[in-house]
Length: 155
Image (cartoon, rainbow, N blue to C red; front, side, top):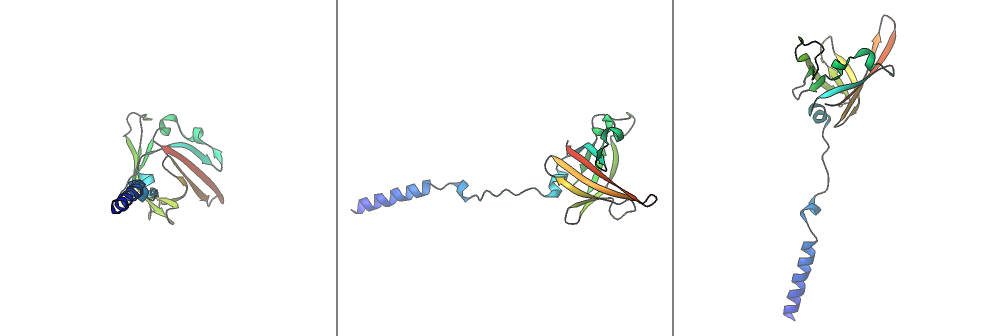
């Protein structure tokens, strides 16, 4: 009887332990990347530019500008790279540099923070492949506002 109890206990332990795996201990929680990680993980290429809801991309940008790569670096600097096609072969590869920051609990992107050229944009979408923001400018001369929406994709 003692051998049967031992055998039964051993079989139960084997059945119980074989039902467990390393994956069962995983709570399947994947940590989503932060907005900082999403923005700085790769370059971005402009795909659309809207002015007051009207697509003005082809009116404002040439093909050689639409392949430019916007890089947001982890040191809070940014660069605009001419991309594969330079508009003017004599131009440098990096055509713009500056600094950026997040504001308002990372719902806003600020270019040149703390300077007279500071510009704030509201982040509409930021994920692994799309980055969209919106900015409204007020013209005190005409007392009108213009809203710009910019769409980027992963380059």
